[in-house]
Length: 78
Image (tube, rainbow, N blue to C red):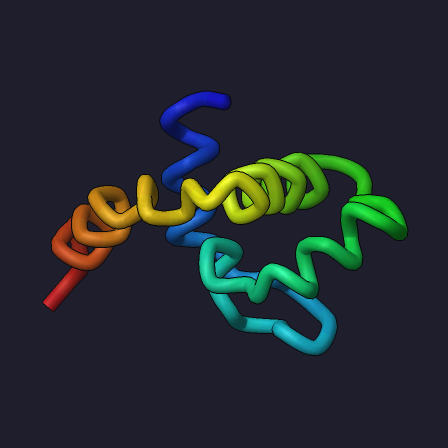
C-alpha cells in the first residue's frame, strides 16, 4: 500500500456496473465483498478494489478522511 493508491481511492470513480460513477472509497461493503468472493478485475482497478475491501473489512475506512479533505481542497476545487 502506498500513498498514491490511497489517494486514488478518494479520487477515482468506479468505471462500470451498478455503482458506476461512485468513488472507489464510497463503494458499499457488500459490493466489495462480492468482488472478494467472485474475483477482483485485472489490473490497477482490481488492485484498488482489493485495497478498499481490505480497509473496509478491517474498519479502517476512516483513515481516508484526511485524503478526502485534501482532494476536495486541492487544485481545481471550489
